[in-house]
Length: 480
Ligand SMILES: Nc1ncnc2c1ncn2[C@@H]1O[C@H](COP(=O)(O)OP(=O)(O)OP(=O)(O)O)[C@@H](O)[C@H]1O
Ligand SMILES: [Mg+2]
Image (cartoon, rainbow, N blue to C red):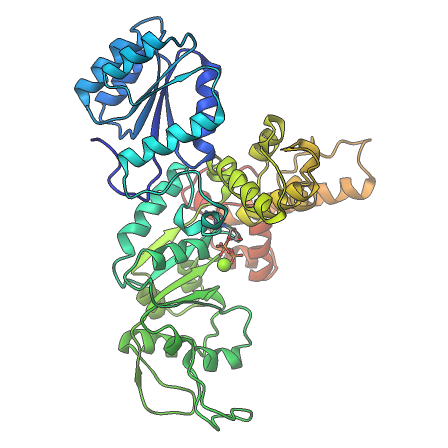
């Protein structure tokens, strides 16, 4: 059958109905559990989608439609691919139509309006038919605590899932880049879990939070007496992660004195403990993460070029949540489920209005921010649906309001003078930054020189105002 080749990519569901509201309901239902929906508002469109070799795992098919009726479409679908499960839906369900559609090879028959329990059950069965090795899409709370098993439903995250699957079986070193909270560690974990090293350890080390003097011994270990306080021998993280994966987070913070030692370890696949001289073999896979561009750091001589090339055997860029909005609803649902189990609250879902608010927010803190917003909402919610007033986004969205600050947001006469002043300064700062960055084709160090400030200030403001260096480099317009 023309189902997706692997069990990790989300199922694709074709929803055929001439009634917009029915399609919307079914789309929301399947997307909420991480599947991708493709809509067709007529039988003809549905058949075109199938013939265009779109990968479809199963179909919801309305019976009464203006052009070609559902029964006719069903017959054609079966000619194109006899294995695709087709769930026939009808507002005028009679035993006869149900029997007739089943005779024509329908997988099941559902009456409108839908009963959510029946809908869940039929979806689980249809997914299992196409992907027998696949678990129910309605995960248990425990499954939901393993976000690396299903990264998202947006096209971008599905592409990232394919990259993860491509690189996982190899021992290639991977650089994962992206803004804070986008899920870089989760992607690293996904690679480990799908690799042959999955029974070994996945050991994360935050290169930014360990003092440079301690980091060397933390990574490579030390011998007894190597330095004051080294009272016993200590194998480092490289040795501990042997047969597994070592995840070096915030690699951009790796002190320059440790960089050559890391390079040597990667090349020779051996470590020498601090204070020791015997090389110890390690069988290791390295994945690193960064929220700064390592190639730009190389250009600015802040990161060793040879180490960068050694690390960049494969690169994955995880985009911010605001550039893959389809994932918002999916993740919000996932976090709601996780949290309602944890707090033992009977919460059925998120209201349409609250979903709209979630969808329109910019999420500067990305998935981590969304998770926190939902966790607070579940805690606050006092009936069984999360409403807009349960969402407390303002605290985390403060920087965004000022980011995109057009004077329209800060209305003269409605905002305090200090707020107006702050907004105006931010506007000017952002304009000046974009201007300087355009002039230097995205080079932050040069922009810092023009603006007579330091690199760190430019870097942090670029992040704060969400200025896309990529867009600037590609000569695309950024909203100054
Ligand atoms: N696909 C996902 N599904 C569910 N939760 C996710 C997903 N991706 C990330 N998260 C959650 O979002 C939070 C941030 O993810 P993670 O730590 O991987 O981000 P990061 O990019 O490494 O952040 P930082 O740059 O701050 O280190 C974590 O709580 C993680 O469990
Ligand atoms: Mg991280």
